[in-house]
Image (cartoon, rainbow, N blue to C red):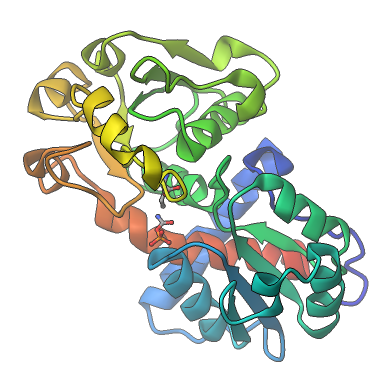
Length: 310
Ligand code: CP
Ligand code: NVA
């Protein structure tokens, strides 16, 4: 980290940052994105190295972190379970001690949240959650930025979550509590969100609906995710049956606000959690949402390594 920037922060859950820090990050994202679009060089992280540890597959997270770090003048090291000692039972604590002596910031995609918490507890450098079974804060950062970019402040708005009570749903709940909006959640029975797992203090930030159509009524944003997340593949057949009515379609979008947006973190399965008409339709902003992973994460790395600029 920059000399004098002594307060080391990790980004393991959405609630690790406060509302005013999010306001700062969204403003930095706007500036960093504009410069990038204008082909203006911005390299505040020359000689800094990002270690990326992937214990699950990725396209967006890998490309956005890797490209983002190079664009800011730094470099990256890419590790997976299969090609590192992590896959041969070296303790997470020892890996954290070693990797954090050689690099400046670490991004981890893994299974249990406890793994990144153990890593962070023994790391000398900031650790970022690039997806765990419980949370996906970098994705929600991009989703929120995309909403704000297209529609303005999200405070007081309604987000409809249709589908699994998974890592994305949990992170939406944390974001709602911090930024002051409401999530209308509809999941099949047996796949509900749990306020305790989501890590929220009170349940006022979300309402549960039995039917997905009811959750979408009046929503400013409708969003969903795959029926089966990474790590749950053994439940695939059971989930395909349970989730059959949780497919975002034109009828659901029709009961949302007329200018409602549709988002999906991707990868998507057309014909399962969303119809092709919706994801490829005029209300869908999924490509901007994916692109914004790059810009928000550059702002996040800048903030964790250099603190506030100016
Ligand atoms: N949305 C997301 O995190 O995508 P990847 O799994 O491709 O990284
Ligand atoms: N919920 C999904 C998100 C993928 C980006 C998963 O965890 O597989």
